Picture 1 (cartoon, rainbow, N blue to C red):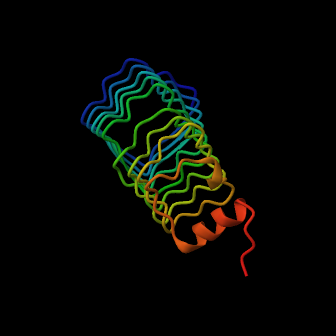
Picture 2 (picture 1 turned 90 degrees about the vertical axis):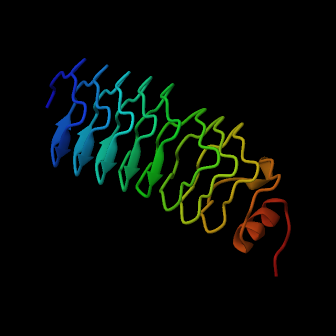
Picture 3 (picture 1 turned 30 degrees about the vertical axis):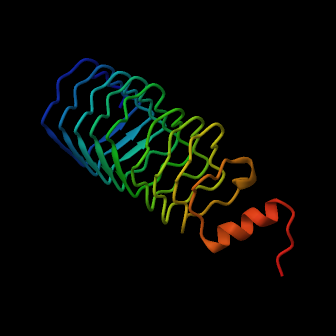
Length: 192
């Protein structure tokens, strides 16, 4: 708690079932680290290197990842609620399940990937490139998609509650029947 780990080298280590609160990991090297069952609360990972890390069933609540390198990182069933990823390198990231609600993901490129079975409730995806992304089973309730590129996106079987689809360019976007009805109703249609 309240510890400073700035600039440390933790490459290739295994971190298991540890808890960190209000800790600083600025410019720390976690390259190819394995993290399992850990909890990080209000921690600062600015400019940290987590590239090619394997992170499983861990929580990063209200953490800051500004300018962090997450290239090739794999996150499985993680809770990232309230975390911010401003200017982070997220290319090649793999996200499988988990809770990413209230996250700041502005202007990131997730194009062509799969973001299935993830809770993105109230996430800010302003300006994101999510072209051809498959969101099956994900909760996108009230996600901010202003200026997002969504061409060819597959929203089938995703919960889009609170998103005004009529404001988006839906070119080649895949929707299921419930979402089509939601879109029609947002345009004033009466469904009987």
